[in-house]
Length: 271
Image (cartoon, rainbow, N blue to C red; front, side, top):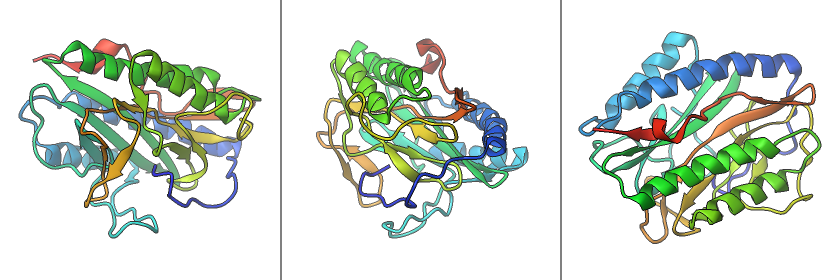
């Protein structure tokens, strides 16, 4: 989410029954995402991945959350069911073109399930990739893992951002500072912002009913610029990586609602 994005004011803490519904829908959405991932290979048409995503979402009983979504700042509604963001495009890419050898592809997908919003994303690398590209993907995946580890009852959201920034920098990359995660559930984008940097013991207290999308983004640069089509690209044209999971607190315990965490090798497409 762009840091300039306005979200509904106040924390929309979720009822226990709503989080249970989100967990149910989240499992389905992750299954859809990884089914799409299995279709990604050199020559795959981005529009075909988007078509498949919409078909699978509707088949499972949900609705695409992104298609037709128009935040107040956008010129027009988003036209697709997934974001397909390639190489230097960090997020919000419109599905077009083809997958090619050595690409880094980000697939972001959202679904409305029983009137509740779910969100998740993965990055896949198309072999052959050099070590730097692999480490970029690995850094972002590891940042998400560690961020989930500190998303616990009683902690502050500042610690989530602190861990994301520290992890990405430990791999020699930078977090994207002007894009962030967000609350999610009753709306696609809600407060609070979940920054990819921060300080311990600062920010919103993580409490029961809080549900957010944590989404570390990394590159060689720390700034993303907006394109004409409202996607975001890295400032210096360097390649980027993005992972996202919806997580919440249910009865003081952390629940990973859209669990995209897998072994690193699962995100490499060997051809």
